[in-house]
Length: 236
Ligand SMILES: NC(=O)c1ccc[n+]([C@@H]2O[C@H](COP(=O)([O-])OP(=O)(O)OC[C@H]3O[C@@H](n4cnc5c(N)ncnc54)[C@H](OP(=O)(O)O)[C@@H]3O)[C@@H](O)[C@H]2O)c1
Image (cartoon, rainbow, N blue to C red; front, top):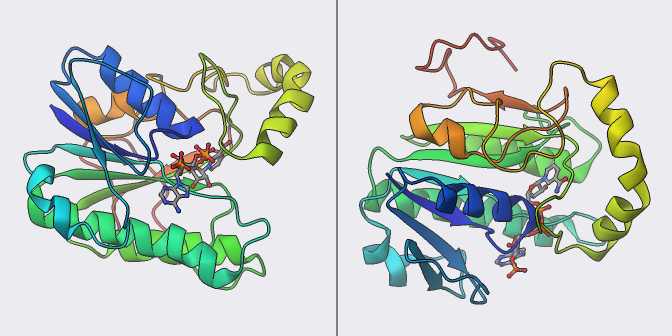
């Protein structure tokens, strides 16, 4: 299996990248980054790319891939809707379209956020933009999963690229055992790699950055149940 990770330098992408590298069934991990990662591994291939709205220049390097973990994203705090839309919507759709062409049959896992609004009615700008992103990704001719993360605790060296979030994680670290205790039966918030939250097909399930709270959800491709037999909400 060959996987591609977007956002591998970030906190969530770190989990997807390292889970993929730990899995012997993954023969190659491709990381598309704008700055080289300080990670060396015989199965890791880094592609340094500048324009995330246009992947034409690296299209030939995106062939033969089985799954994409799209973990690239920014906080909406301090950003205009146009700026947030460019990074959230334009980049994700451009990546998906390039992958559909280069690697037909690929499964696309989009890391979204809890509270995302696919109806476009939310008063929160980020929720509308992420909702539109989810909608339009699911309208593309590919198998896609919208992975709505709730709270995620950074572990095993994962660090948020967002200074505000780093401060929040430090300030709330003492509460994590309490969250564990309040969430019986859910995957523990320490898990950023392989884990029990796996309603995704085949190996992609084991590699997706695990959801970490009862609020995290994975939506199946539009139109119904996934091919793994897991029953999910029928409508959004
Ligand atoms: N962390 C959480 O608790 C949490 C919870 C719910 C949802 N999420 C969602 O998960 C996604 C990733 O979050 P995160 O916490 O991993 O964020 P993060 O630590 O800030 O990492 C962001 C990633 O996106 C890349 N990126 C940002 N702006 C870019 C740009 N203009 N061009 C190219 N790459 C860019 C960064 O690359 P550089 O290193 O080059 O900047 C980095 O790899 C986001 O969509 C977020 O909403 C996260």
